Length: 204
Image (cartoon, rainbow, N blue to C red):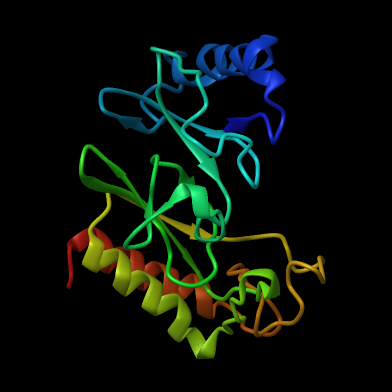
């Protein structure tokens, strides 16, 4: 994933294209790594982070690279009304790396494409969204159950490395981190393994 977090100038000043060219030259187009790189619609997949909230509220940013299948990502589509369509669908196809409440679904040509899954989420008082704790793994499992019901091509499960940020992770119960910890041990990686296997197998 590359990006221009909130800075529209990155689309026109060449920075984004230079970073895309670097990804192509070092990884996606490099014979050493090309078979390890994820391909989607016959091209390497390139996620582009637009920032949160997205500076483009009425559509996707006007940039693409024909070498890649490009998809744009933002955070909390569920709290960006201009990006949210009925049924918790991402209106323009933005992928969401995290949502509070019902995870949004990014669709492409009428088919579910991507959904995010978290172990918990912090509240958003500005939008009257209450926090949801882990509930001994039930929140995470519910997210996977929704993913299996919706049937997207990609399920994005996160995340790591936010334990130290009290704003993002106020306590262990509200934290969405799933890496091994003193509090939960391997519980969430084990749950990830179980749920991801069921998702891949098409278990209802």
